[in-house]
Image (tube, rainbow, N blue to C red):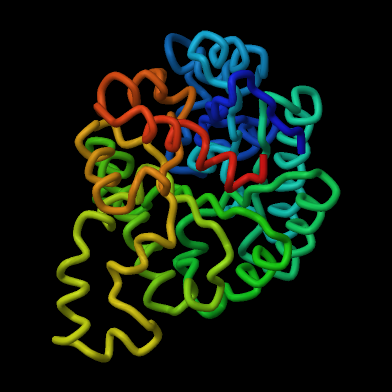
Amino acid sequence: MARVHLSGGKPPRIDFHAHVLDPYVVRLAGNRNVASGFGARAGGARRTNVEAMTQPQIQIDTMDQRGIDMHMISSPTIIQGTAWASPQTDLELCRRVNDTIACWVACHPTRFIGSFVLPLQDLHLAIPEMERAVRDLGLKVANLPANVQGIYLGDVRMLPLWEALDALGAVAFIHPDGIKDPWFQNYALWNSLGQSIEETKVMASLIYEGTLDRFPNVPIVMAHGGGYFPHYTGRLDRNATNQPDSMKNIKAKPSEYLGRFHYDTCVYDPQIVRALVARVGADHLVMGSDFPVNMSDPLAFLKDETRLAPADVDLAGGAVAARLLGL
């Protein structure tokens, strides 16, 4: 992985939440994913967004305009997720996405950091692909959903995934695929509420199943600020005494695990960023924009809207991400 050198000792500015599409995989995915209509629309902002996810120079130009050094690029699995396919086809499509992302990184090693997707419905296929992505392609970040066919990532059946992440020194970036409950399909609630609910569920799964205690060295970055979980742990801590069986797999109160996660700043509300800083510290935040779906400037958001101290802007704006990624 390329090492970033900046003048004046300034930390790099890294957007940890930017997306890349593979046109073939999008076409094959068709209408099988929650945001299936995204890639099919021909005009307006949607078309602009698709172009920005398929043309690296557009992202580079945008980074230059915003004063951002690097994008950590990931597959938007709500659009081009592949879990609908048979396990072998899922593997082939994941490999294609990973190769596409690796190509972006190889062509622009000082501007892009790559992540990889996995055919998680079959861990016998997923683990070798993770090894290929990390060792052969040089990708550092595992782009993970909240659940795999209803099995959340903390489930004991997912232990081989965490063992491999630990052994390979990879970073986990958890970004839900989109809640599929029919009720949430009205009013785009799958996106506005559903993503935050899925993040809350996967964080609870990782804590209560003891995964965080088993794998203390795997960095975990939660998309969208971790959803609702960081802001409502009081009732969980109450159950530490009122419902002692809830503590059977864990060594501390649930709120004490908040510091085991990192959180991106793609929350659309400066008050939530300030609440996260108050709860876990700016040293647990990474900048995220959901580029190009959210076209606002994430660095300007941190600097101008959140009213964070300059030192905290430096941490969340890139220093924490650089440490996690070994830059």
